Length: 292
Image 1: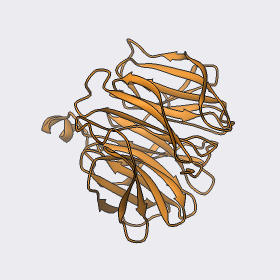
Image 2: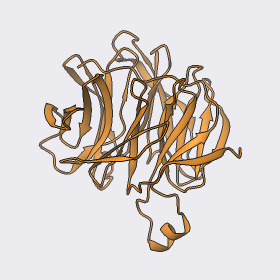
Image 3: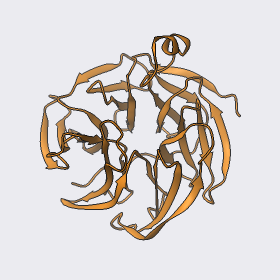
């Protein structure tokens, strides 16, 4: 396990920190406290963490343009006005099912949005992964308990995802022009029986997948052929998702969580729920803008 310098990017404590997304145009990292119904933002170069209250549980953000963001919430897709903070419904997804909420999501290189849902109590097979692109919507993979690790190869020809209860990382061929799956998913890495659970992931410019291993205090790197090639200790039990940040996308920010920890566990893990910055040179890439 590598010893890499870890610093605190934001000391705001999230109950369930998730969904980090970096906007290079403003040097700003956005992320969520899903259960706390908060959107957080902070410039990576420095400054205060700004906290925005949200009307419902929200887990993912994509940039539409300079003034607007697309949020994935427990009732579907909403457009947020960056200047005013106003949130407007755009496209309903499972809005009639109060037992589910949104979870892991990511923008395909073509601008399509892969988004996911799960049971609010992580009920077995209560969630799904969906595709949204230029107003068109499809269900891709049903019967998923905790969808995570949605990410894409740089050329858009491969998608990855997992069910954290199953702990198998899948890969599936994709149409680079639409972000739709081509063929059937295949096992990329079987994590079953090993410590911790597969959580959020990103893929760098060389095709290396970086995964937050929830419950194991680490970030793992996987080569394009599905081999674990590096493990980085982050010093807190529940890292949830990484994101490439900085002017050259060459560092990793990592959200973390206090979910499920009692008072003694929180006292022992002083970093739980804070957002980290790893002193780890990486060849990252920026998230594309979403095409709605």
